Amino acid sequence: MSFQFTEEQIKRYSRHIILPEVGGKGQQKLLNAKVLVIGAGGLGSPSLYYLAAAGVGTLGIVDFDVVDFSNLQRQILHSTERVGMPKVESAKKTIEALNPDVKVITYNEKIHKNNVMDIIKEYDVVLDGSDNFPTRFLVNDACYFLNKPLVSAAILRFEGQLTTFDYRNKENSPCYRCLFPEPPPPGLVPSCQEAGLLGVVGGIMGTLQANEALKLILEIGEPLVGKLLVFDALHTEFNIVKLRKDKKCPLCGEKPTIKELIEYEQACDVRF
Amino acid sequence: MENIQVNRELDLKGEVCPFTFVKSKLILEQMQPGEILKVILDYQPSVENVPKSMREEGQEVIEVKQTGENLWEVIIRKVK
Image (cartoon, rainbow over all chains, first blue to last red):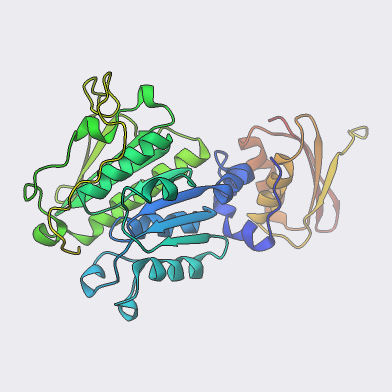
């Protein structure tokens, strides 16, 4: 691989280049990489910010919401003066101010059955930081059908969860539906708005998502496949639960019943 | 030592740590195993640090010599 960095890039990425596992070769991989982040909120803010700082060359951001005061307790891409601005626009401004090497592509729209494949197909890695089950299932199924690695994180109250589904290697990776075959009934799982959330939990889990994405791009270390990392902020504990591929999984099992995208109903239309 | 054929020469006069190593590494990464890089330095701490970091990365440092007042050459063979 050949590469030609500017003086500014050599300085900017010097701490990466010094690492034997990264080097100029790895930095060039990052600059060539395309990562899609679903949701520019509590998880997407830190993941996007670190991916941009790392020099991931193309960042796609999907979010249809606008910045609200209630977001600012954790969504560090946004700011007080940007309340009312579309989140994707605010995210783009922050990222471009940090690193002009990054091309930001914004999707100021809801993810649905008819746009999800077109959006995801352009990217190398997908990070799900969405706040609702219909989106999570749709993004999961689309990544599965398109063979894209999916780094999934979720946060609520003082707890965070993280796992990576590597759909480039389906034989050895469980899928989201092995864990949750279908969305829970409406009202069973509280939303952030109902249950609250310590802002920093998003920072921790979103940063771990970015770490997974960087490892996948650089092809170093071991991705968190087949393992669910559970973080407990109150006791500062990380636990890993093994995830197994479910033979009866409706998506990736021996007799799959799901062969096309399914759009579930959103339980309630509150904005988080 | 006189017969070593240098494939690339990198003049890093005016550069300081860690950029002396970073720039040497970037060039070396794009060379073939077995090829020789000569790095010219005028920043004394780099005369220790560049060879040290190169060895840590598994490269072979063939020679470090002072060639003038505040002027040094480091000869490195790319191993991997």
